[in-house]
Image (cartoon, rainbow, N blue to C red; front, side, top):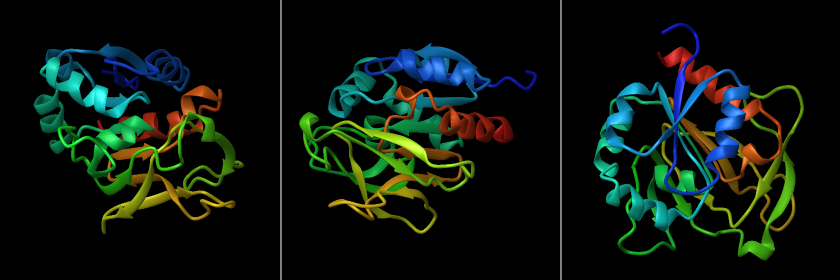
Length: 202
C-alpha cells in the first residue's frame, strides 16, 4: 500500500471538504466515508465538526454506528474535531438521552461548553508534540473535556481567560480529538500529526 495512508472522512454532515483538503495536503489519500463497506478500505478515520446529535442519528440511519465502533475497538486510528470529539468520547454531558457515541476515548466531554455560536473565539495553543510554535485554535460552539481516564494524554488546554485550564485536545493510543477546528485555519500541523500516527499504525 506504499507510504500514503487512506483516511476516510465521515461524510454524513459537517466540514468534510475542509478536512479532506487538509489531509490531502498533509500527505494522505482521502475518501468520503458514508457506508460500512468503505471502512474496510481505510487506514484511519476523521470525524469532522458538525452537530453531534445529528451525526449520531445519521450513523444509525446509515448503519455505520456498530461497524465503526467495531473497527475502533480493533485499533483503527481516529481523529475527531469538535463534534467529532463528542462522538469519540465515552461519556457526554448535556446531550440528548437518545444520542449515541463511539466509546473510543476514555473521556467525559461537555457539549457546547464554551457557549453558543456568539461565544465562538480564537486563541493560540501550545500543543504537545507540535514544537514549532503555537497552534491558532478556532472554537465554534465547542465542547471541552471535563475528565480524562488514566490512559489519556492531554495535548492542549486553554491558556488564559475565563476558561483557562480547560482541556481541549487529547490522545489515547491511536485516537486523538480536539475541541477546536484545525481544518479551518490552513495550519496543517494537527492533520500531519494524525497522518503520521496512521502511517506508524499500519
